[in-house]
Structures are given as C-alpha cells and as structure tokens.
Image (cartoon, rainbow, N blue to C red):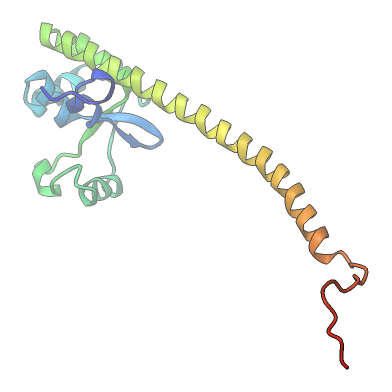
Length: 172
C-alpha cells in the first residue's frame, strides 16, 4: 500500500473532503474500504438511522453532487445509480464500526480516525504558521515603513549649495 505524508495511507487521506465546512468521507469510498457493497452500507445506516444524526451523516443535494462530479470526485451522476451519496463526518465514521460489526470495520475505523486526527493537527499547525507570518508581516511592515520614511526624508531634503571642487583652468 502506498504511503502518504507522516506514514498515513494515501488511500484514506485522499478520500477525506470538505463539504458544508466539515471533513467527510463518501459512502462508496467507505464501502470499498470496509469491503462491502455501497447498498449494504446504506441499508445498515438506514436501519440504524437513530445512530446517525445530521452532524454524523448527511445526504448530498443536487448542487453538491454536481460540484463533486465537476471536481472528478464522483465520475458521473449516472455512476450513482440514481441514489444520492451519503457522507459521514468523523463521528459518523466512528459510528459505522458499531453498525457494521466486523473485525475489518473496526481496523479500518482506527485507521480513518488516525487520519482525521492527523488532518486536524496539520490544519492547526497551518493556522499557527499563518498567524506567525501575519505577525512577521506586521513587524517588518513597521520596520520597513521607518526605513522608507528615512529614505524619503533624505530624497526630499534641501541641500545647501556646495563649493565647487576640482581644478580651475587658467585662461591666459
């Protein structure tokens, strides 16, 4: 299996998307990872719908599906077979292991949970980096402002006439 950054399988990390400002995974990707058919996964979720509130799982609307097709996340609308995809948040993925009740589901969920945690850590470190860059920009903007003001003063400073320097040619 190909490895991605920090040793996490690329297969998991590359299947986490941001939809409705949440990190989610598609039902068809999860079904493939759990080695079950997508319809079986959806059926298990519907039978246990009380375990999947809206912040754990939601169904994509037509606009979201069109956007995912245009970004090549979903090959085409026809590939969905008329069904709209379910997407699962981190908590929803965690709940799937209790619904599917297989050893593979538990192992895959552990891997997925670690990927979600790693993504959260990476996003947090990016926030820290962005903040540090902003602080540096403010600091250097202030320092450069002082330098530019000093240069402007030197440029616009009126200078007293200077004495001529050099040889004077005698005219005899």
